Length: 185
Image (cartoon, rainbow, N blue to C red; front, side):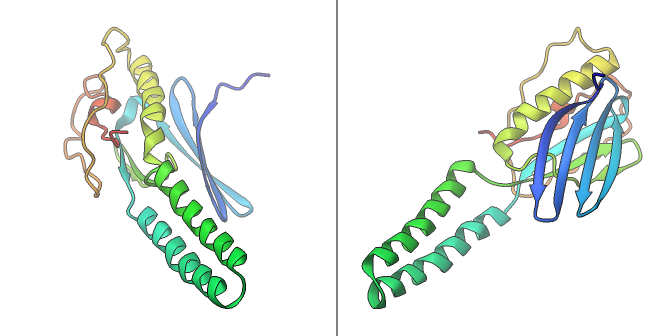
């Protein structure tokens, strides 16, 4: 039996994670914490905006790698063995390079009529455009706006989340992509 839901995103964590599923009429978040699962359903016709922003924590992840592996590599280089020191320093450098290549981690806020939820939609901001395009297409189809061309999402992203203040717009006029800001990458 084929499910009506298709997985569009997955954000993992040490104690579980969140999987996002999309159907014809709703967006479903399955948040797993250890041995329990919490489901949140957001109906596409009630969706006002989805805001994704870069999180500043990713800079601390790079600083942690540099602060931990840098001095440790120097200590091993001087007092133990140069090869071991080079390997430890190389691991730290590789960690920083991977963090830079993947880009900033992301925070997200989903606003519907009546609720605002801060749930991780994507792990990194560079994937946000692809996921938001899928959601925008589903919102347009659910609201019957298939005749409107999709508006590309473009803007420079601030470090803090933007809060949309106009929740009074009638359905079908405000698109998720029009009200959403993502990282320009």
